[in-house]
Length: 130
Image (tube, rainbow, N blue to C red; front, side, top):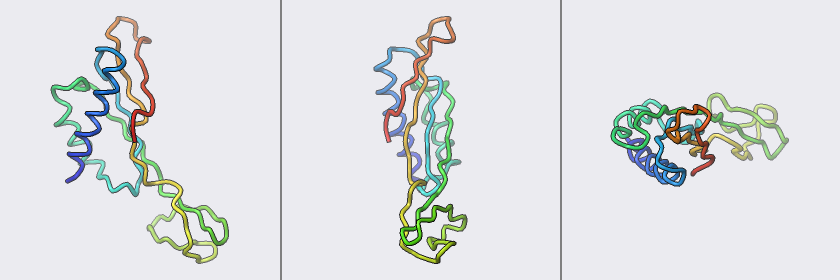
């Protein structure tokens, strides 16, 4: 289960990015993960729940945005989403394809609370890794 080591690295990157914003706790971690990234979402969530304890993100919520698997046929120019992961163009039957999305795995942003009483005082740290 490589999701444990993935989450360890993600939390390390979140900690580094958050520390640059001050000492406030991380309140939200937003990830973008492609369907073809080879990551089991349930295992990643489980790893987060275990590994986040005692960190600056202990009370944060984890949001995972699924990125669809999309390809482009270089033979006919068609763009499609192969539902069954068959890499054959449904328009022309061609196999000369380019994957245009679905392999991503990145931290889109994190929210860091500056610990003031003002709820609008949270800092958004965007695109901290990937």
